[in-house]
Amino acid sequence: MKKIIIFSFFFLFALHLYSQDAATLNARGFRQAKKENYEKAIELFTQAIKTDASFTDAYYNRALAYSKLKGYELAIADYTKAISIRPHFRIAYNNRGADKNELKDYTGAIEDYTKAIELDSSYAMAYYNRGIAQLNLKEYEKAIADFEKAIALKPGYKEALLNRDIALEKKNE
Image 1 (cartoon, rainbow, N blue to C red):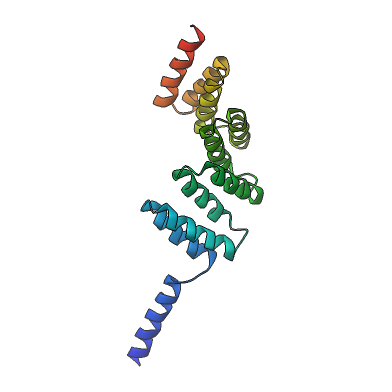
Image 2: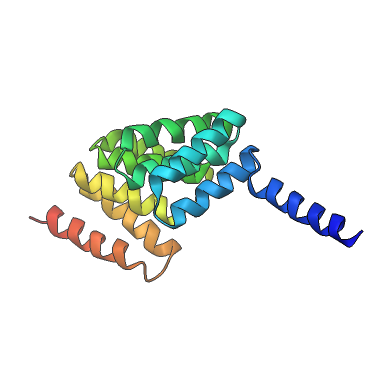
């Protein structure tokens, strides 16, 4: 009798380990991403999406992996899909803005950061990121205001302090 119970336990463990439900595939992909094996992670996130096309986390995680591989257009598409499923996904807006920034679509990035801020007015990173995009557009006053807001929300925010000083310097040139 004990052998059957032990076998059943290992069978259930193995079944869970190789389960093909979306959550499990997503978790396996996440583990691969943590190991910086982004190609395998993308494969697993894609399988999760095929299993459940409404599984937001798989789109979001695949976007992160694409972004790590500098596949910004693919990442933006996945962030967009995640947002369409979960419209209040502030982090997805912020990260989509970051990828638009990488593609030098500063206006599009600002729109995404602004939406993230609308969803959470205490989101210091979104203010900081929007300040960077404003700086890239030479909108120094707006950049300074965003960096100052980020600093007010997160005192000692070194990157915001540094970039505020850069914006102040550029403004006065």
